[in-house]
Amino acid sequence: NVPDSMDSQGLSDGFEMRRAAIDSSTSLLVDIKTAILVVMSLHRKYTREMSGRPFWSYNSWQEYTEQRESVATNASVGRK
Image (tube, rainbow, N blue to C red; front, side, top):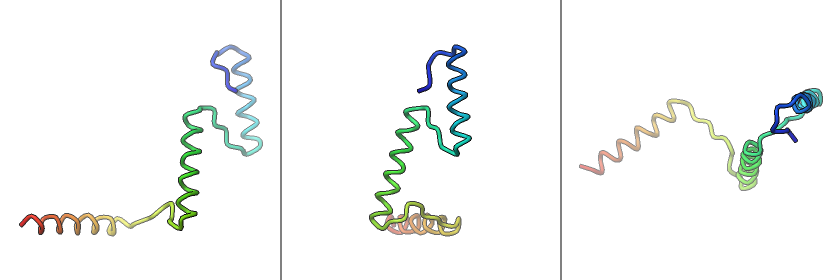
C-alpha cells in the first residue's frame, strides 16, 4: 500500500516499494484506476486473440487514406 500522507515514513516506504520493483524488474501499479485499466486491456487483448482476431491491426498511411477516400466517393455517388 502507498500511504496518502506525505510523512517521512510514507516517503521511505514508497521509495522502498519502487526500488524493490525496479530491482526485481516488476511492474508497479500504485493507482487503482490505472490497475483497473491495465486488467481491462489485458482481458480485451486475451478475448480478441482467443476468438482468432488480431489485437493490433496495422495499416500504412496509404491504405488508411484509400479506405477513407473510397467511403467518401461512395457517399457522394449515392447523393446524386
